[in-house]
Image (tube, rainbow over all chains, first blue to last red; front, side, top):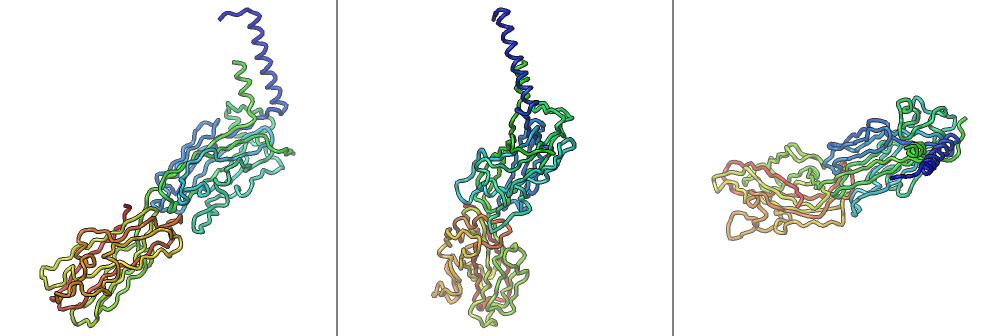
Length: 233
Length: 218
């Protein structure tokens, strides 16, 4: 394709203008970066044949959990999954969780969203994370390990379950997570930014029971974005 | 290219996801429904008796002396069972190892068998389900009349003696038993199985047979 020199210069000018504008906004706080990614190896216990697979890229949080067999063929009282999650931000944040898809049995005796417990525990700053006097907030009932607070009455239940994530639910919020002296690069996290945030363990629990036979699935989406104003003195 | 870099620097929100899957297979189990009881026996005994929920293996019932030394009308062993399932089920039994060449000795046909007291009353049980015993095998055979009054030997109807169960046969079937409860739950469908002998002038000696209960999905 041929174009005149004048047309080419005009195009470059527009691109440069766009770059300057975006960069300036980010430094001013209008386009603060928020990032969520994997914190390393996830674990699963009490699940013969169960698996948990984590995309190893620090740029993404993509986890696939297979609880395995959860009829009484599984003799364990509980299947527990722990997924380490790292969050980074250049400003106050909030973390929203929702169930974006599910394939549960239609029978009330099949696995339901309420049969899968969820909780966030062990929130801690990484070595380069920003530590403010303002505390982070884990919102009840999502602030407990469901595997430690399971109720059997007689069907197992938990303080928080996936059934409570039908609509987007704020599960956590707090002040800036990452060092104020470092500009985050969300799509390219170098080694020196790997620890520039906070980490928590996302826990899932499912008790093997006399569920109706079948296969079940659900996808939980976690989204971090601008949260309520919280100074970081 | 420069435009692409500019977009990458902007990330006012970010998301990740966790996909969860689980599998539930059809499941059935059988266990003791409580201790076995023995009535009408002379020097009879039970070894390895079980409590409710315990695995029903290693139990021996000695029906004692079943010659006319025993003045009882019947010797009755009642074996309670507990069944659990997350799907429809069938219960079968088979009696093996019974061998007495002398027709005047105790034969499989001399041991009455029956199924009764099928209940879905325990907690955690699907009370809307129904159960169907094989009609001819239902009930305690000690309550039945002589199956063939034309013979002096005491007879049971065909489906109510162990002679009918030298090969595995269904005696009970039904709907899903349990509601959604953990496997540690002790409750389940309960029933009694009966083994009965009427003391008679059998040839001296003894017999041994092993009865195996099997629960399956249909």
